[in-house]
Image 1 (cartoon, rainbow, N blue to C red):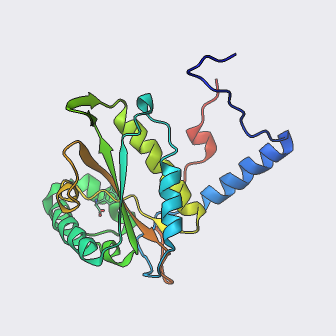
Image 2 (image 1 turned 45 degrees about the vertical axis):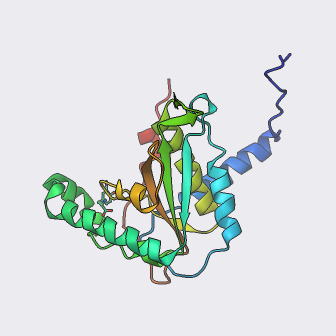
Amino acid sequence: MHTDKHLPYTAPAYSPETALQRSRAFLHDMQQRRSLRFFSDQPVPFEIIQNIVATAATAPSGAHKQPWTFCVVQNPELKKAIRIAAEKEEFDNYHGRMSDEWLDDLRVFDTNWHKPFLEIAPYLIIVFKQSWEKAGTEKRKNYYVNESVGIAAGFLIAAIHQAGLVTLTHTPSPMNFLQQILGRPDNEKPFLLLPVGYPAPDATVPNIQRKALEEVMVMY
Ligand code: IYR
């Protein structure tokens, strides 16, 4: 039974065995995802970038407003401008703006204000959130913007990994400079910056573990 406003939907149907096997395979694949800080400058086929952004844009959103823009930066001058601006903010973060507790929590990652990956990675994807949209002369508000864009970013990260690429969820803070450098309209605010590429041959990752299922899942 459906009204004019609704259309029938059929989910892909799997046998119980196939469903179990697919869920295991996806878990196994996602368990291998790591945030990377060391990138290769090896080019990435542009169609992969188009596909991962299109995958991100399949995310659910408040009132289906799709309140996101994915800015894909390949231009070396723009990447350099972004690196310079991000490093300026990060220098201040590491030299007084972050608390001792915060710096202590970051010790295992061995990070600092230098962000060479912003120039080395072949692409930067900057996710912008739209808190409102223009409908003619009117401003129409969007709903659950952080949740919607956060889910889309999750889809994007999964798609990046699925394509054999790596990324880092990078949030230089504050990151208003991205709005200026990329000339975004005033209804858009930067949400997340993701360098995308292949890992450097000598890339390393922090020696950290994920919580066990028993620690994150509670059954009622
Ligand atoms: N934005 C800084 C600091 C930083 C903060 C968190 I929370 C991290 O998980 C990692 C780093 C930086 O990018 O170095």
